[in-house]
Length: 203
Image 1 (cartoon, rainbow, N blue to C red):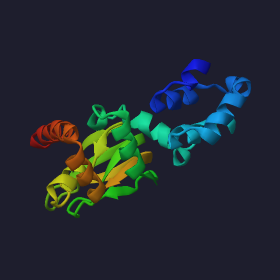
Image 2 (cartoon, rainbow, N blue to C red; image 1 turned 90 degrees about the horizontal axis):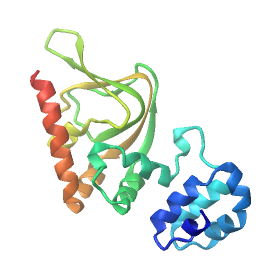
Image 3 (cartoon, rainbow, N blue to C red; image 1 turned 180 degrees about the vertical axis):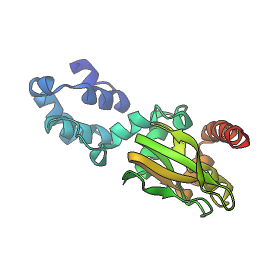
Image 4 (tube, helix red, strand yellow; image 1 turned 30 degrees about the horizontal axis):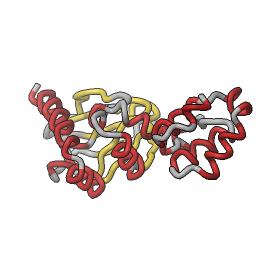
């Protein structure tokens, strides 16, 4: 562990700090203090401070940048991005909490943001003319919702409802478009997701 905390790669150092248990933190306090004060990478410094203060928090609202990066790594839309690129995505995302039954997005409105589900489930509902809404699908942790309207710049084709408490990372249109321009590999992942969505709509 001591050797890993001194690795030349800042990503490895940050991961090593996250892996430090509460019991190890006391034994490694001197090294963690050095990282917290002097490391060249801001993420490593922040994670070292968190480790010294007892580690991760229980609520999503207090997720560190490093925890967001590791979560986004499991999201198919961003799985092919490098740690540096994931850090950029994590930095532009904002965290939002929705209660059971809250409308996250409404069918027919112009979509200006997309959501990555961190916890809970989202009900995707479609209303035909003169009829009540019907649930089309359920989206779960690591799924992305609201991206179709964001990309097409057309009204949303479905409403999104929180099925229980839902926590998300929200990315606005301007930030997402900037990401697509700078990271072409993300475009391929987006196309795969859109193809899957279109198949569901056709059914």
